Image (cartoon, rainbow over all chains, first blue to last red):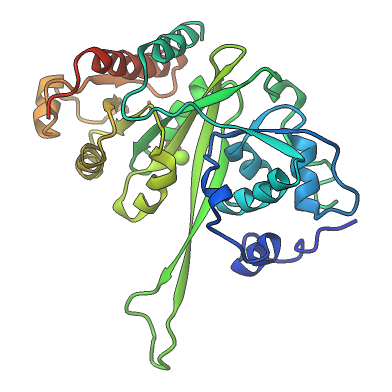
Length: 119
Length: 206
Ligand SMILES: Nc1nc2c(ncn2[C@@H]2O[C@H](COP(=O)(O)OP(=O)(O)O)[C@@H](O)[C@H]2O)c(=O)[nH]1
Ligand SMILES: [Mg+2]
């Protein structure tokens, strides 16, 4: 099986248009941060778009949107469109980042310092 | 499936997988001019080989052949390198390196939303980029520390002279580092965390 866009120039506007169906800027998509963690909830759907299948496969363990973007070699903005589809179908779950509102809380910072000290 | 002609499925190597317990992430942004050592710093503390995420920007070309009245669009692709540090079974820290020049600021919206803070990486041979970055971070209210990556042969200034040169307020930490060195880079992140921690007690003077 081959991806529909494989012969196209990497990340040309045309390729991205096909992969995302020309969609962008939906509210589901906006809720996904670069460091939202994505985890699969099911096996890939037979006959699904190759990019959808690839995401479901690689997210067997949690992966950030940024990592998915890196492994698929797609811009994060295209990845979030694909993720919105998978979320709507319940194929993946999204674990939102800890919002650092205006100021992150002291306990969170202490946890991070602890982790860094072990490096 | 055929992704870029490779036989393997795209995804992390087994040893790069996060535990299923990973529940949430936080991020720090490393910002500075080209070649200042962002990728090097990210790579020296990251538990995974740094990865690259790209974003494309489409904008109308300026001053290019619009003879036919056709608006020319230019595509700019900007790569951001990033790395990862597992803090504990539940918490993951991501570090993003992003170019500091004004023309890349379109990347900052998603990137800085929810970020803990930033490291401004400075090369003393090219301080100009740092001015704009520092001003922009101040405007956005993003807390940051400044780290001077010491290159051989680069002019060395006493820290206080640099502070003056960068017009940096007293309360903003200014540290030196060697981005190639893991513990030195870790110390930069620690300086940021300590600074952020101090802000939870004493908010930044306005
Ligand atoms: N001597 C020295 N070289 C460095 C240091 N940090 C980075 N470099 C080198 O400078 C070059 C640019 O660094 P890179 O991390 O790619 O910069 P970036 O464009 O900011 O991501 C690379 O060849 C690095 O090996 C440093 O602290 N000392
Ligand atoms: Mg780089």
